[in-house]
Image (cartoon, rainbow, N blue to C red; front, side):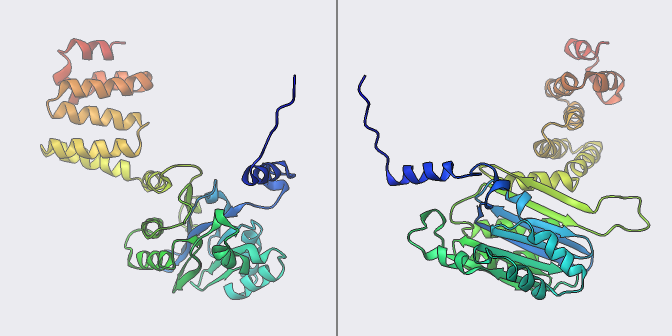
Length: 349
């Protein structure tokens, strides 16, 4: 059988050579990937919280970019992310160095600094940012088509700094800074707002894939809490990472529980349509919550919608029969349904 001729385009040959290199699929064995990214680091003097928010058109940036220690500082390491920057920067901050001195030290010691972008903030709200020469130059390198972008740099202010590379324009970091400064919610919500603003301004020229938010806070000696990472969420791979990140943030901040409690109060006041709407919102945020399914069934029952109530109750009981079957059978809210054969079958022991 004659051998066929195989031809490869330059792009295909380049891809094959890339995949054939040692450690191509093992980041720990080779250089870290390019995290073309925008991020924001912040300190809140009122709450003593330190935080990092990040988005990238690269897998798993939420795990690679942020680093923070309560009472000390926060770091965002990106572009060709050097993951040693996080612990090194924190250790230097603990020794009393300023963020500017820390950034100088860690980049001076790094032969790959020209490919890095790093931002450091301390617990005094002081920040410093380094963007390597190659990170800036590649934005206008016609031979670097994958990472061709319009801007690499930062916009810093009191208690925060927004930075990025391969960005649509300098306006991306500027609007992030403005969104964070005018924010009124928790630090995590303000970081989320800043990320949303940056994306709305064009964000990373390559698009979206991953995102993350990390917020830490010193433990209150009077509290029994052992949680310093009060928000620690990430989306590693998603078509709409910001939508998913905001959903996770709402779960972390207890939004579904608050909606559930408000829905119960609205139902008691006879405002059934509003109660149902709130429970639908809660279930949209946490769609696997049997408790939310059960609560929505209650709201439907109170609104005189037995079919909808039984449908929701069926979902909850099917998923967790031991928990919800007996509870529904004894629940006075479902008393009007006890004459319904479908309800009786559903709650039967």
